[in-house]
Length: 213
Image (cartoon, rainbow, N blue to C red; front, top):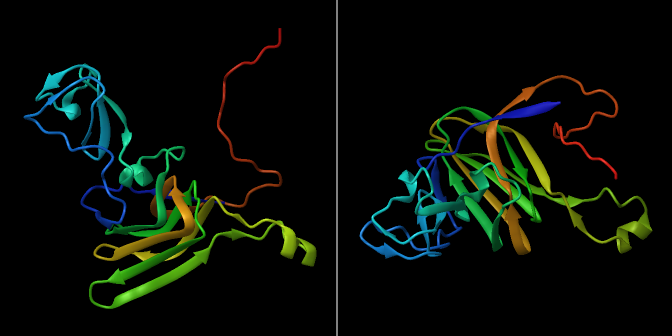
């Protein structure tokens, strides 16, 4: 079993993306806002719950004027919430420059046909370039299933053995023929925990109680 020790992606690490931050207008300190108006501040979308002027959403700790709705579409890939994915027709691209060593990238909540990961060294050029198809062939076991089973795609993928270090640029491309989605992109170092036992499962620890009346 392996886990990825994640690193937090900051604004300085994100060099470029083709996902526009147009979820709402940027917050303007001099503008007046009415209830239900939305703004972008700190790569997050806020909605006004009270009329205000000059009330910074980032400093409104008690949510007197603003309520945070979530990350912008571009930053949903790094907000630690798989259930609210980045969504865009066609291709989604990110260019990152992490500030620490990493060797793995995990993708969760995928709706895409393929993933491409490329690493470029500022001196040596491209040192890693791999494209993976996300077509899931688990349901194909004979010629009948090959021709007549519907095409399905994996909803998560982990790419390991990637040489990511300080100064290197990581380019990620997700592609599909329709709406492309990704819930989370996690960069970090892969750590080996050991061998898993038979029938090992992954889940949440739930202390809720259900009773039948």
